[in-house]
Image 1 (tube, one colour):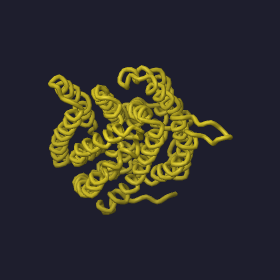
Image 2: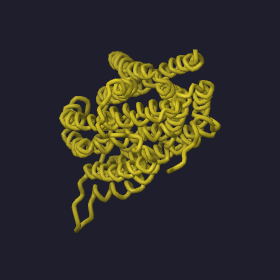
Image 3: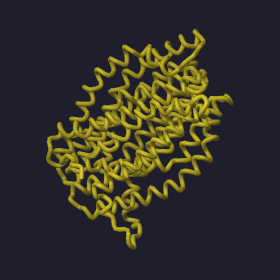
Image 4: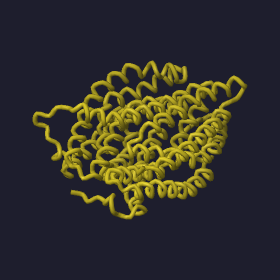
Length: 455
């Protein structure tokens, strides 16, 4: 069985790097995976790049519920491990796997049915873009169980402080995807025809299948399945309710993220496909820069959950404060790099033979980069605080914060901007203001909660 760090006694500064670094590296390669998809799709033109951008919220809807179960697994199993309750760990694993199966049965046909309608509602009203969007998203949704179970299993492993397993799958998958994407997109002359943008989807599905098989084998080798006893097993409502207490707010928060992107796309589509395409690529650049923050959020959440279960509240506070400090420092060099190379980044993923369009892509990319540089530190306060509060079984703050930040404020502010004659740049700067307003609320509330935790 693979050894893992002791989250209850090891030095917290060391744990943050031991757990957070593999998670950050893994998600870096996951983002490279997505960038590879965007890169090859962009070779088919601006329409394909726009199609990838406008299907992203639907993919988020695919993972929001599995993210809820993953968050519940990480939080509740982590707390059970901290309190040395092995029986509770087995019970939670059983119920989380059972709920994952139910989720697949319900979610897959629902998303397949509503996907075309969502694209017509919020996407670019162009038949070519719509057709490309469907040819990509339908295969992904058809194999939804691959993504759902991978996220759930990762949540179980995170509770143990194991971020290396999922990281390995993301690293290997990203490397394979570099060759598999163009192979399935363009084919091999004389052997088989390419599938166009649908080839990107089938490459993703194939890689995800292999990754899931590996993660299941790790659960088996670690003896986690041996904690479960399926003979005459029946789900217990008390355990389901405990899982839902964490999973539902976490899932709804992710839904609000997806809805927020739909909202932004709905307002930005008024300004054309170039603005939409640049925003889609820009969000992927944001993901790369924020990967250390995500890694630190996962690490601090695991540490906080186990120590909260063990009632080591001083270690809970230390983990929260150190993760904020480390995240702030790490983002400085990354923000500088993004600023220096921004003019070269966007043309890599949005190809155009028209010189005027190519020049506009560079200009739009430079404008968007100017906005997002200042957002990074706001995201630190938001993400780390929400994850930390969830780990002490306070998930509702994240739910209300995401509703405010992703839905209520954007709709109100964007509508006001457009009615006052504003443009896409005004919308981007409005996002800046909304994020920082939310970040300030988060850090004030988070500090107060952790200061008074044991009271």
